[in-house]
Image (cartoon, rainbow, N blue to C red; front, side, top):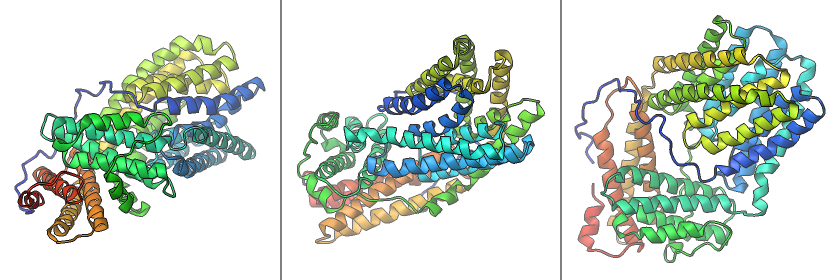
Length: 554
C-alpha cells in the first residue's frame, strides 16, 4: 500500500465535546461480582473493629479490603497472581504514605509525595492493564493515608491490618473458582461471540459497521488473552478456543456468518453446562492457541510518559491550590485530578465533567444519609457498605452515576476518626472537586502528547507488514497450516492495535493531522486479507481463486 495516499487536513486543535458526556450506557455484565466481593471483603473486618470500639482502624482495614474490586475479568490462574500484586501495590502505597505522614507535618511535602505516588500508580496500572478500577482506588487510599495522624511506632500495626484484610480480599475473589472454575474464560468467549454477531448483523457495510468491527476484534483479542493465561490446555479451553476461532471467522467474513448461531453459542456459555462444540474450527484452534501480542512492560511504559507527567503535575498543582484556599483535606483535590487522566485529552475532558457532576450530587446524598450514619459505628459501616455496593452497580453505566455513591462513601470514611460538621465537610468536598477538576485539566492541556501521531505511524507499519506476510503465504502453493493460522491471527491483532491507537490519538489536542485515510485503507485491505486467509484455511466456503487472490491485495 502506498504511503503517499493524501491525508485530509485536520485542525491542530480539536473541539472538546459536551454531547453524550452524561449519557447512560448498559451496565457491565459482571457488575455484581466486584459489588458483592467488596462487601464480603469489607464487612467482617469493619464490623469487627467497630464492635471492638476501634472504628479509627477501619480506614486501614478498608485499604486491603478494596483490593477485592480488581481482576474479576481474569481467569483464576491469572487472577491469583494479579490480585497478589494489587495487594502488594496497595500495601506499598500505604507504607510510603504512612511513613511520610509520620516524618513530616508539612502539607506541601505530603502533597508532593501524593502526586508522585499517583503518577507511579497511574503508569503501572495502565502498563499492566490492571483495571477497572485502575489507579483511582490505590491513589485514594494512599492520598488519604498521607493526611492521617501517624507516628512511626503505629505504622507496622496499621500495615499489618492492611495486609491481613488484603489477604482476606484475595480469598474472597478466588472463592468462586470452587464453583465455576472456567467462568472468566467462558464470559470472555461469550463476549467475543456476541461482538462478532453484532458485526455480522451489519453485513460488514451497514450503519455502525466500523465501530462494531473494532469492538469485535477487541473482544476476540481479549478472549485470546484470557485463554492464554489459563495455564495448561484442557478440554474446556480447547472447546472455547474453537468458539473464539468462529468469532474471528465471522469478523473476517460477516456476510457469511450466522449471527443467530453465534448468539446461541454465547448463551450456552452461561452457567456450568458443557461448552458447545464449534465443529471444523476446532482443528484450527488446536494448531496455535492464539497470539500473545503483549509487549514487554518496559516497552509499554515509554508511551505513557506524557500521562505520567500530566498526573504528577496535575495532582501536585491541585493539592497546592487546595492548600492555598485553606482547605484541610487537599488529598480530595489531588484524587480528583488523578481520576481525570484517561487515554487522551478528549476522554479526560469528559471524565472531568462526569466527576464534578457526580461529586456534587453525591454531596447531596451524603447530607440525606449523615443522620443515619451518626446513629453509631455499626450504622456508619453499614452505610459505607451500601454505598460501596451501589458504586459498583452504577459506575459501569457512567462514571458520574457511580460517583454519586463513591462521594458519600468517601465522606463517611472521614467519620471513623470522629464526627465531622456536615456543612463544612460538604463545602470542602465541593470546592476540592472543582479545584481538582479545573487545575487537573489545565495541566493536561499544558502537557501535550505529540507522540500519539508517531504511534499511529508505527501501528500502520505493523499492520502493513502483517498483511504482507499473510498475502505472501496465500500466494504460495502450500503455506502450512500453522504458519497460515499464525499469520491470520497476527494480522487480526495488528488491525485491532491500529484501531485502538488511532482512536486514542484522535482525542489528543495540538498535534499534527493524523493519517486517517491511510488508516482506513489499511483496515480495508487487512480485513480483505483476513477473509482470504480464513477461506484458504477451509473456515469459509470456497470461492473463485481469482477473487480470493484479489481479496488479498490492498
